[in-house]
Image (tube, rainbow, N blue to C red):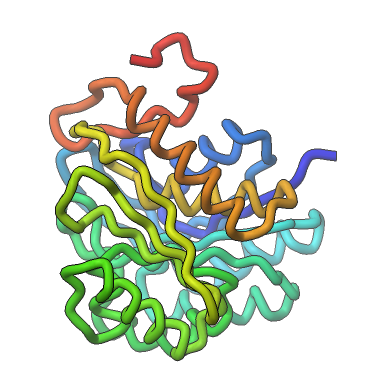
Length: 266
């Protein structure tokens, strides 16, 4: 039977990030994807033009509709927009006893548009993080959540320790914002650190990379992989998607989610 995964996130009309990127990733990795949409964005590779946030009630209703009919093996969150949606998602996760929740701590779009209300940062920190199986912050997001500056690999470790102390069971710190020829990610399970490194891909097609990585982790968890292996395989998948990206749009283009089977591999 095909594993089922869920994404709880915003819609990207440009197709490169959000729900669209997540569902493409699920499909590419052989997982049946379901969704709960939190917001509708009018955006493309250049920027975000408009955002319409949905009510927390309809978000919770979407989750309930799926969870009461299907066995969801793993789920992820992306854009949650505000504290009311964060509260509703957290309650839903607990009500439906979902053990494997991947939290992509989305705050700002690639183009710089804020996707999480500033007053909701406290709710993400105190309500959502303790419900997560793993969180996947990039360095700017980790700086906000942990309240510390991060400019080195050692400071990534310090941030992971702080985030675990806030209740996250596992933390995958993404090091793509550090300088250097490699892109190091750091998994901390509350006891040990495990590093995943790949050579940095020089490309302008980086829209939706965080969504794609967290969706790939979710897919591999749904397929039965342990967390470390899910993170390792997800990083390999994202690296390939970056390497084989096609030029789309006039800004930061999307990755190639179907690079392994696409005739347009680049």
